[in-house]
Amino acid sequence: MADLLVDKHGHTTVFTINRPERMNSLGGTVMPDLVAGLAEFQRDPDQYVAVITGAGDKAFSAGADLKEMAARTEGGTAVPVSRDPDIAGLAACEKVTIAAVNGLAVAAGLEISISCDIRIASENAWFGAFEVEHGFLAGVAVNILPRLLPIGTVMDMLLTGGRLTAEEAHRLGFVQQVVPREQLLETALKKAEMVARKSQVAVWGTKQAIKFWRDALLAEQQRYYEVVAHRVLLAGDLLEGPRAFAEKREPKFRNQWPSVYDGR
Image 1 (spheres, rainbow, N blue to C red):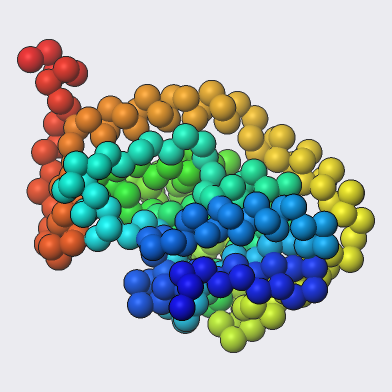
Image 2 (spheres, one colour; image 1 turned 90 degrees about the vertical axis):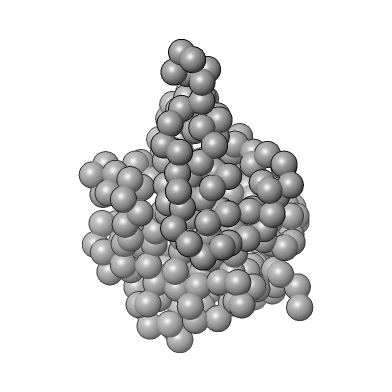
């Protein structure tokens, strides 16, 4: 089976991350397939709305496949710093995107939902950013989530590895609707059809104006993020975090900066 399933429902394209045995982590061919699929969606004049969801009942996406990441870092392959606050081109998409969050949305899974315009969650869904537990920074969440949630909530999530339930996320305005799991895709498709019935020129213009406000000074923030992220990577904890996850043990972080920063 493909790692990403693509289905069309009228004017709506549904992308389903299809790795339920790995909690729909973004390994395998998920990311290149999603990038290519979204590019094709944007080019198709008959497709107006994209819905992103996950296979199964447990996970929207658990984010990066840490076992694959551990193998890459052990092999000496550097983990790249995110060059823009986006996942697979979702945030840059000029058409409407909806996240149908069917379970846990963690790390890059959370960031997929952040990159979408509208979020609908099942009652069992929850959101978390656990990057600090593995020795690295959230690429999208640190830049965009403070623009969508109260700063204290974001600090709590990102610094402690805390989580938000679907109901908490709805109360705070991050999620626009919470529904039973069995109604999730149907609800998302109905929402997409509501968008599809409108003037697509007006929808496009409205989205661009709103995004201008959301993205104000984002380029400057991204450059600062890259400086900070490179320093964090040089500290070396990223080697230990995924390794500990793969070995099913608690990580033993160095918690110190490399010698170039401490004067030795």
